[in-house]
Length: 349
Image (tube, rainbow, N blue to C red):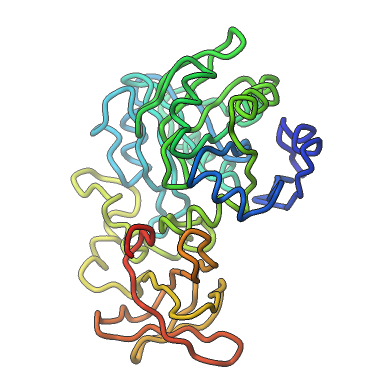
């Protein structure tokens, strides 16, 4: 099982580990609740070196991205990042991806860790002769620094402060530290990549500057409060971005893999991802049955929200329910009513 270049650092900090996307990664240190609150109130640092990443450059790189991904990278200038998706011919989501644009024909592509190999293979197969592609997963470490005080902390350590969905190049110990103002928590901050051997020192530098070490358990509760999808639960190869209520990520004004299929279902979706909050202290879990009027489905992602103090979740329901339909979740043999909420869940009180 692959390990992060920071594995020994996590062991020294007393981390508990879990198999995540085939990697042995820290799920928590002090505890999920404390780490979650540190990110919402101050700043936390996550090791996300399990994420995929590869360098893409050369004449034709932009057009390759436009063909293989449903958002249009030509709409952002160099120095920006973009959220997008790789679809199959049926319009299903093979992966959701962040693209960092460094220059007119120079990019970093950041797929999910479990999908690095198939997405990299897709790009290699379709790349024109002048495009070069090189994996960065084996040669770099990637850290996410998140929270209200994260931008200042990133600047203090690397000399640069990435704005939201901006990419910048700073330095750490005399070498490049590339960063994007992106993340998976809904908080300010960014993701910072350095040469693999510098990963442990960079992680420690963020801790010394005041960040709390955070594991993937807190990352999951933080992303759920924002309604951010998790590939493999909320997104998969049989589900379109339209059914995931993420139609904004589709740019219709260019040709891309899956576009004809999306056009066919755009007016009548087979299912829809809906958000909900429990009325009591019950906690909805992945796979729990859901009903809404005559429609049925299952919970895709659900958990207790540390910030809100009650259970929240997202469920696929087929056919899509009307606004008047009461959404109920079956928990241990009993049906429980919910309040329908369009994510993000935070800020709706």
